[in-house]
Length: 131
Image (cartoon, rainbow, N blue to C red):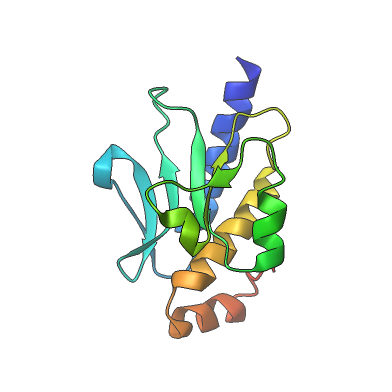
């Protein structure tokens, strides 16, 4: 299915981007992939085995980015009370889902909301800033 292949490619790009950020590491709590920095999750990548719809969850503290994200097809505040803290769940296979580049921007914002300042300085020095 083309949509699933496209969603898988997006997820792979987002995962690669997230794990390339300074101090990022992948873990698998609850059976799903997450990217952490300083032992704190900055993006939930879910599973890619077909058991659940492909989606990611990020923390968007910038009001404009958060509002923009909520206009994308299927995007909603994250469950388990995380939505109150700015977390949004972004389905990757929805028709009109955000492009991988925008998803990476959101991952970087989420990373910046979670990462210690010393790691963000390294990110800026690398010229990796997308915001």
